[in-house]
Image (cartoon, rainbow, N blue to C red; front, side):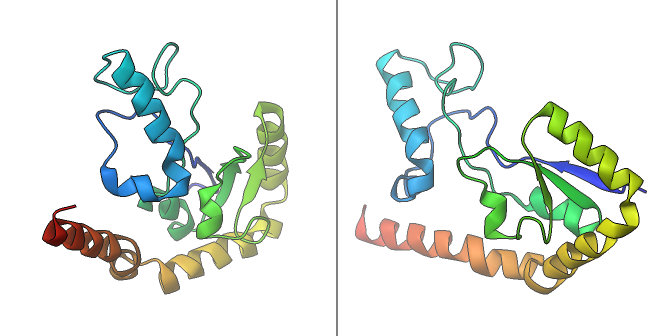
Length: 160
């Protein structure tokens, strides 16, 4: 049984052109700027590695896998990327999860959590209850997927 989970909130390698629906979302501005750079150099694949189109772009990532550690009742240790921190759309820092800044901070906080695990159990339980109350598959579809599908349908109907 895991007690602690490492959670990330930024996007890794990104293949192909970002979908146009994201252009209206400020958080994805860097994706389109990076894509423009790729297009200028005739690169068909975006990636975050050295020399890649996304080498210097930090991109938010909010996926259901962010919910899995909380649903499992583990204490979430989350890298604070200092730019998007999209996990804060779902959970409250210090109440539902613990941020770390770098490798040394990660190690220190992991050690502290494991040595004082009982003090962190209420945090893990709060995050788990949030998932069960607000972030079930049904709610996820209603909140995040249905609006995009509706927007795509509207765009398709108007030809935009």
